[in-house]
Amino acid sequence: MLASLNRITGLPAELLDLYGLVVHFLLRGETTLVYYNPAGLDCSWRVLWQRNLTAHPQIVWQRNYSYPDLYDQFNAELFVLACLPMDSTAAIQLETLANSLNHLRTVVRLLIEVAGPDQESLARQYLSFCLRRSMLHVELYFRDYHHSLILYSFQVFPSFELIMRRISGGQDVKLFLHKLDDLRGHRLRVIPDLSPPNTFFYRDARGDNQVTGYLWDFLATFAGRVNAGLEVVRPSWRAGSASDSSYMLEYSAKGLIDVGLTTTLITKRNHWAIHQYTYPLLVSSWCTMLPVEKPLATPDLFGRIVCPATQDRARIVPHLLALLLLTTCSAQLLSLLIFPPYHVRIASFEDLLRGDQKILGMRNEFYDLDGAFRAQYAGVFHLIDDPNELYDLRNHFNTTWAYTMAYIKWLVIKTQQRHFSKPVFRWSKDLCFFDFMPTSVIVAPDSIYWESLKDFTFRIHQAGLMKHWVRKSFYDMVKSGKMSIEDYSDLETIKPLNIRDLDIVWRVCGAAIAVASAIFLMELLYFYINVFLNSL
Image (cartoon, rainbow, N blue to C red; front, side, top):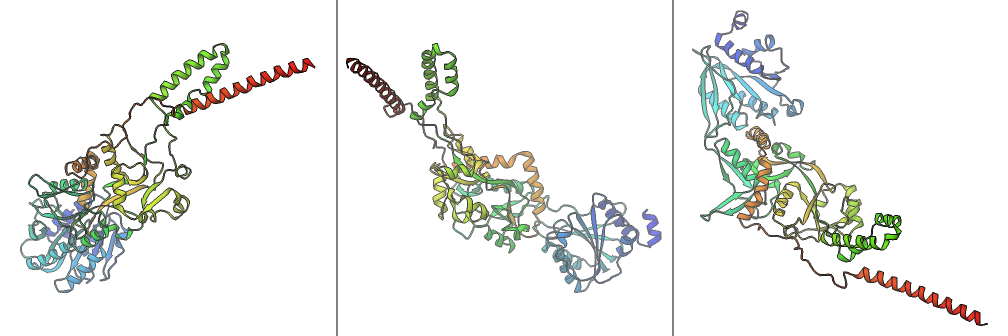
């Protein structure tokens, strides 16, 4: 095929070899071709894309206008064939192309042909611009080469370095090699939110401050995989408090950090910054953590001794009524005292409205809820403004209140309750505010690490590492002194029955004696009335 193209087009053999590499690359999947030639230059691809690349969707772009909404129109891969001049207008055309490829730069494949003679300095200038605009998958060559066609690319880490490869039939040349497999010791700038269990400081054996937490474990493992290090950027807000993700969005947008480690929920309210969020690390939910229902008080147990089924059996065997009641009451009483039943389980917000249990929540979080929900169930909330008060009550398992909580933090609480004699709180899926909450960390717009982080996220979920890191974060907090393995559950102590426990028994006995006395008095009255009447 290449030989026939050579006869038809008259193109050099090395350029046809490059064309063969492009065709082989395009066979991997569905790709849209974009021919970008705003200056109308006479480039080699002008012949090839019209005749031999018709199997793919094509866009011919011959005006120097920016198309910022290109991202919203494509969900497949883009392969851009760009024809650029050698003068100063090339910078403007590259800038227009980069602006049009917003949120596509890290995945687009760009092959640039420069309409002019080979100049290494010019290749360095064009490719360094592509790197600054987060376009990594770029190959460049010059139309008027001298002896052999040289394909220019670049190495990103540890610093920009121009790579030159000769195109010939005898060499194995691959296009668009992945540049982030080895970062060569490059240090990723990271800012932690210092909100346990996400990330938090602790002192190691040498007294140095270190960072841990499940988000830190995630990024540290990623960095180790790509041969990179982590550099902690100290937050400018108060250490130890939960940071506002808006700070990290600003820092990453300005290029001050590479990754902001905080659990950012992707909602309609922050949809404007959707392109600064990584692929969701976790799909969480925001529900209610309720105190486990308490056993019934001992006086209430006596009201459950004789059940309707027992009464039915008593009617069937009236002659054994006394014996049946005696043995049944004794057996049920022992069973109820050893394993007392619990209060009615709260299963809906309606149950909370009818009961005394309230949800302790933050006022600003409450107003993020749906307006109709707030109007209907405002009575079940007790709102405060101080987050430290809420954290203190929740971390000490104060059962006076129920608490709103993300599922990630519940996994930590659940791990902690394994060390209790019995659970104190339970996770209620029936009392959820949001069932589906994608959770991400923050990166820069068009971050070169976005795709690598996404692929790494898939792998760790397949291996089950994320849930392991979340549960491990509890033990990390114990080691750092931020939490302790302490049993906050109420210890069960066996106590003898007292007079108050037999309150219902005394009442029944009193009522029975009163009824018996009344009957006895009625019989006496009946007897003496008859005697009196007979004496008349």
